Image (cartoon, rainbow, N blue to C red):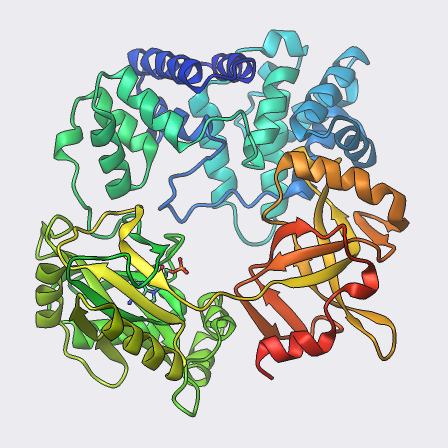
Amino acid sequence: MTSFKEFTEVCKTIESISSSLEMTAVVASFFRRVSESDELVGSATELSIVPRFIMGRIFPEWSALELGVGPALLYESISKASGLSVRHIKQLIRETGDVGEAAKIALERSKRSGAKSRTQTTFLDFSTMDGGTGGAESGEKSEREGVLTISDVFERMTSIANASGKGSQQTKTRHLQFLFNTSSPTESGYLARIVLEELRIGVGEGIVRNAIAEAFAEDVDAVERAYMLINDLGEVAVLASRHDLGGVTIILGRPIKMMLAQIGGFGDLTEAYAVEWKFDGTRVQIHKDGEDVRIFSRRLEDVTSSLPDIVKLVKSQITADRVILDGEVVAVGPEGKPLPFQEIMRRFRRKYDVSAMVEKIPLYLNLFDIMYLDSAPLIDLALHERRRRLDAIVESGERITVAEQVVTDDPMTAQTAYQAALDAGHEGIMLKALDSVYSPGKRGKNWLKIKPIMETLDLVVVGADWGEGRRANLIGSYLLACYDPETSEFLEIGRVGTGITDEQLAELTNLFSQYVISEDGGAIELKPAVVFEIAYEEIQRSTHYASGYALRFPRLVRVRFDKTAEDADSVERVERLAGG
Ligand code: AMP
């Protein structure tokens, strides 16, 4: 067993290193140490947990488990464990800019001030809950350092994730309070960051993948491939430690990473390729195992319960017994044109009253790939081979089709198909190399997407929100508005928080400090002065914002220092671009 303390020491070491090679070496040697003293605790071995923890993740990506702890619940737990008020905790976060540092300081202070209230309440709270182990939980922090093991932390987090229904918030707070009370201030700091999945010590998938390879003398490509197929670096580490990567294969019921497309042009593919319509809907990966059908979203979340109509279609019109399919679900309006993406998302997010929604927003399934058939993975077959197999197992009907393909090597033919796709209300086209294999998780040249480029909008910033967690002392998102020259009003149209690096965030926070009109909680009202150039995927009608429009996936391109607030784009231009 490995202590959580050892994990935090590794984190600290990594934070002091900037070279990713060195980081990889530290992570690799940690993985090796964990594997040497590994054993099964509860449902997992520690070696399956640490690759995720070190990236600030808790559960495997494919797992339906979610911690379900937001900043408010975390602050409350830190408050209870430290005896400091939630306001005080927030103040500390503001001062340090890091929830981990704030948690550490809070628990240090409580320790210095005797921690009476903390240990006493903890004793009372947990003597019942943890089978009377309260005695071990009282006492000073220093005695507790190194008490928690990595498995303890994971087991508690699993209990937190499983807490549901009435009283679940209280249960979650108690588990968290227990963790904070059983760890040293330093450990508490890292715990807080993991809880918000914001460890941010600079270790991402690439480093973990390389570290697994280095730790167990395995080939990086083998590690990568295993990851793409089983979707959990924790499990991959365990397999690598047993030199079992060669046997890794697709598991029916477990989502594999989706193959992705790159933006391309008509002349980019020289060999023969397939042209397909690019449907404007939502990606789905369908796993059918006899009567058991599971549907996963692009983010590999299980969305089966929101899509009973698609499940039914698959059961009745896919003749294969055991199969994994790739496709796009679209909603079609009364005139036969695809409905906007937001309509489909309403279906995906639906947890209750699903059947009413099924009537209201009928969905259609366009299948374009097959990755597994009758216990055999097909991802290493060429596209045209996979396509043949796909055609053979789909009984196409009104609601389910195999995406039509035009096979060509002539850019003119592709352009004609492109125009036809746009005329039919689709997003554009996909060009797919006919000989290409299915590469899970890869955005490569074998799938190219061609769609019209959206014009950007110049919008004025009229408000902002403070960030959370590590970004608590930075502005995290900006409220944008267009201009109405007739009334001289600025009309809100959406928020932007992506496309901004940490460095830019700091600069912008600084820039906007001079325009603050008022602050209310985390919300800031700003004098309209700064213009952002914003890119987006789509403009949608919306009753949420005063302009009557909202942007889908807005992203900051640059600050237009050359423009004044009144130079921002008019609501008329927004209307025109929205096509209305
Ligand atoms: P993008 O989301 O712009 O990166 O474009 C790639 C996405 O287009 C895929 O993830 C699918 O959701 C979607 N898509 C629509 N039609 C197709 C198709 N025929 N083949 C592959 N992807 C498609």
